[in-house]
Image (tube, rainbow, N blue to C red; front, side, top):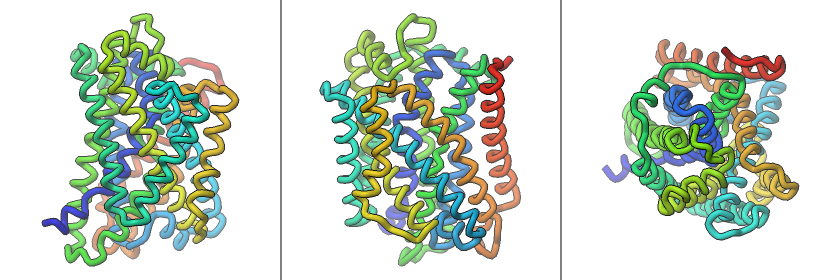
Length: 401
């Protein structure tokens, strides 16, 4: 039983990306601006995430390789180079959100300037990665502890607000209000379905088969339990963010367009709520920054079969975030826009994942059921269409009816 329990954990590392600071920015902005209108987006995005992460975990179990490595073997070289280039841009957008989030949290809690806070977040991420070099279990336990801080923080806050249950239920009906609501919906999708952990999850499971002494089908069952638990908790956290923002800030006149404004609004209601929010944001920034850098290593090594020192990798992905903090760009707006960039990167991870997991010569007995492939293809199509629709609307300057 102890050996089988050790098979659990990869999804909780991946789940950190689904509650990173980008989620804080997009979910609170959506709730404050549109109330419960976009509840359906969070629910749909979380269901999509469960399907996608299950496929990624299954690929690692079936092949003993991660998505980047299998893609390098199966796709033409120009395609591989293109996939690598966009994955590196996604890594930079990911780090932008994570470092800015950690910096804002340190500023709220201790008054540390944003630039110094960004540097501290980068150092903490490096420390977390050093645990991974001593064995994946230590890293998973550290990330799991930070994940618990996030979950507890938002469950505490959700219990302190009066949610309009009928309005929240009405938000399950798909609808948009205007172009900005589509922008936020795309940001929520990008913040929830994270491209870099589609790559990473397969890497976290690829070595779990060795010496486990468990049949492949049972391994898959454990991974589905892992994904269900981790992504379910992450989905509840995301939903609680929007519900809290809708209950406290929608039509209240409170400035909630920034994370600092959210903190001040919570502080005006309850000091404990504000503290729980800031601690959750800090845990999110620290944990997601470490996970994001690890994912960057997986991308580089898998696509190009190259490995660079972690410190150099950390410096390369940290530079854009520190630049944003240094020149004084609004950090919350940068967070939201980074999530839109991530949303545009999802198809480049998801389409190869679907194409590979449907092939029996690669997956063996763990090949996708036809319905699974159809469902995953629909998810990819929805994401691509939503992004294209957003682009057309923004360029045309039109509003969504």
